[in-house]
Image (cartoon, rainbow, N blue to C red; front, top):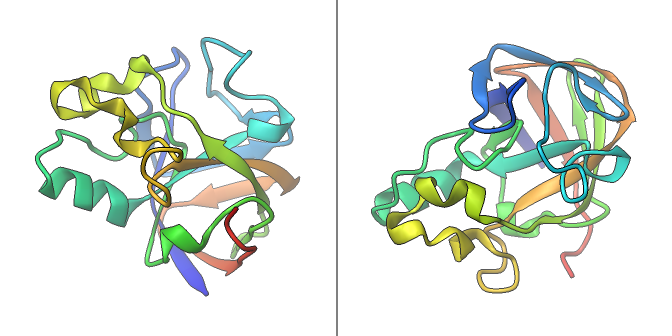
Length: 158
């Protein structure tokens, strides 16, 4: 299975994440990307947050004002069956970066502006399986660029 990097985001002030053309990925996370509350975001097991452009499109079609990066993801991928991804899934980027999905990324109120009536739990894995953002750890560091292809080796979603 393959995907394409549609959007990349980072912010030196937490939220919102701002669009960039490339990101430098290290074991602790994205260079220049800040998380306000490190108890819940960032660190080696949550170094990179990924999301699906198709899920974003579905949410927008349902009336939510969501845009890429609005929910704090660093990498927005397109062209993949998002519901097939889960812990253990490996993403190998053409440029050499390798990520492994560690968990879903539970939503919090800081992203409620991306949803009609603040319904941020619309992307909660427990309530809407297969629509959550995902956290990844970094297996191989490097740079990811918009437009890059990604080979995906899936693990069964729990």
